[in-house]
Length: 192
Image (cartoon, rainbow, N blue to C red):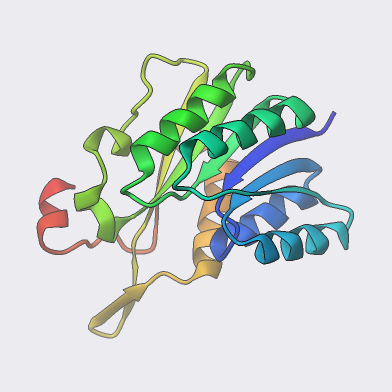
């Protein structure tokens, strides 16, 4: 039976992660804002026999997000793996909805939450550890996206490197992963 995977984010690194998961005989439900991007992603997966269930929903609408998750789980079965890269401002509310809906049906689910180290000041501290300690069937993992060094400068890690890091974290079931260098500056460094 095909595993059901949920990916929150359709572009950049998560596009490549979604295609990787589709290549490995998973039904990948991809949640994103851009319908055209989701349609193109589904077509690309179909070109090699992969299965992507595109879910276009406005992240600012928690009610619609919840309804779309429920429908995806009803049609494709329990989610065994979730990967999410949400804006820090929406993280607590949307992560709680995601976990609430997934855990109603899943015997166990690995949940990889991506963070940008540059956003540490905006992320509730418990999300950097485990915001769901009372749900033992949820295996919470974090992937922090750092920086690349270019001479004496830093730049944001590219989507190819992020995708490789996420895929490695999934393969190795790593509890904590940093992609790039872990060198936040200023107030973010104090909260790390």
